[in-house]
Every structure is written in structure tokens, then in C-alpha cells.
Image 1 (tube, one colour):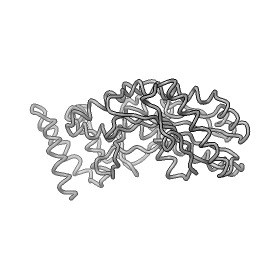
Image 2 (cartoon, helix red, strand yellow):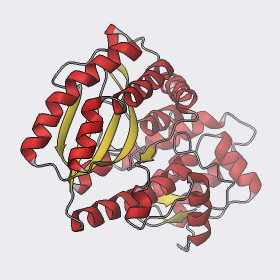
Image 3 (spheres, one colour):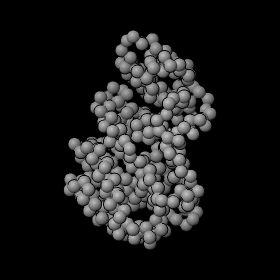
Image 4 (cartoon, helix red, strand yellow):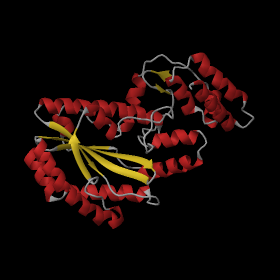
Length: 317
């Protein structure tokens, strides 16, 4: 286990999944956020302004994420072929980075699209674009997903100036899975995973459904030629994880042999140890937790992890 601003495990086989794997997603999203920030910086230097365009659909309990995600992407593809979008791109030199984000709240799954737009458009022109986009977006959503998912004028399409902290967060380029972090009304998939590790069977089922629904989807999609235009090379998520893992040089906090790792993994303590490290736990503290898990190899280990979590939450106040 290595630590920096965030703790992570190293020395493991990597999968390169930005949807299902906390260690890989953390590495991927940190690097993608660096790329997007660099893009915006260089685009502004070239005279382009940055804005964030969010496209949503109406959602409710009982709506399947897989169907909504596919319908959402079909609607986006259709929207990109419409004259209102093609004319805006040509008139205002629009370049984009498209991101897919998913959350789960009181009304069920909420998949939506964030589009980072680089353009020459003024604030007044962006306001006009939002009105025009909203009408066409509502039309393509009904066409691809049906009337039940028709968005309203207030939420269907929203364009706002893009500030670094905001657009990185909204584009899903920050990983938030720790239960100790501040939460909003909706949970991110990795918050569902964190709750599942604490024994919440409903969260476990939701996270499994999420990983199945998102399999094969691309989190980010850049305008053709945009990376080359601003000097950003192309690299796959899988290759990115391998490169970052090889380059990691932080001092390790904790080293586990195969038997210890298997015990921790089987007990559901992998994320728990990461959270403890991020809270400032010492190597001695982490080793003590591992030893308790190792000592319970023949017993019910999942309940032990839940007990340990409650103990540390009480200590944290």
C-alpha cells in the first residue's frame, strides 16, 4: 500500500476499468483531469472560452440503467447530427470533450452527459444556444427513450461557464468513495461500493447492476483532432494505468504477502484499509487491523470488518 494525497494499493494486476475498479479509476481519473485542465488552459490561451453543457433525461424508480444509458448515448449521437448543433460548431468553432456520469438517488439511477465546450461564443450567444439546444434535445430524447424520459426546459440542457473545480467534478473526474466524505442527495457508484463493503446488500446489488450497465462505455470522448491540436497525446485507460503504476514512487505504508492479502480481500477490508490510510493511520495501526483479520481466518471475517469499521468511526467522532 502506497500513499500520497490519496492512498492506493500497488503490486496488483490492473484491469484498467474506470467504472468498476477503485484503484484503476483513481489513477485514470487523476490523469484525465490533468489532461482536461491542460486542454482548457491551452484553449483559453488560443482565444477560446470554456463552458459546460449538461444534458439530462427524466428518470424515476424502476427505470433500468442499462436501457437509459444506451438511450442517452443514442440521443446524444442523434443530437450531434442535427442542424442546430452542426451550425453552432461551425459558427463558433466549437470543440468538445464529452463525459458520462451516473449517480443514484431517491428517484433511482440518474445518467447524464456533460460536454465541455471550447468555443468563440459570447455569454449572450451561449444563452441563445441553450434555448435552441433544449428544444432539439427534448425531441431526440423522446425519439430514443420515449415520452417517460422527456426532460423539462429547466434541466434538459443547461450551459454554464466552466471553472476548473466545477467542470472536473461534474465530468466525473474525481473519485469519491469514502463514507467519511461529505455526501449530497445522490450517491456516486463508488459510494455505493463503499456502503456495500459495510454490509449493505442493496448497495451491493446496485453497484453490480451499474458495472454491468456501463461495461463497454467510454467515459470521455474528445472531438476528432482536438488532442493533436493542443499537443495532448492519445493513450488508452489500460496503458495509462500501467504507466502510472510503474512510475509510482511513494514510500509504502504496508506490505502484504499473498496469504495476508487473501484474508483482507475475503473479509471485505481492502477499501477499509485505504480509508484508514487516508485518515492518517500509521503502519503499526494498519498492521494491527491486518493481524486481526489474519487471526480470524477460520471464523466469520466479514462481521469482524464491520465491527472494526464501527470502532474507528466512533474514534473519529
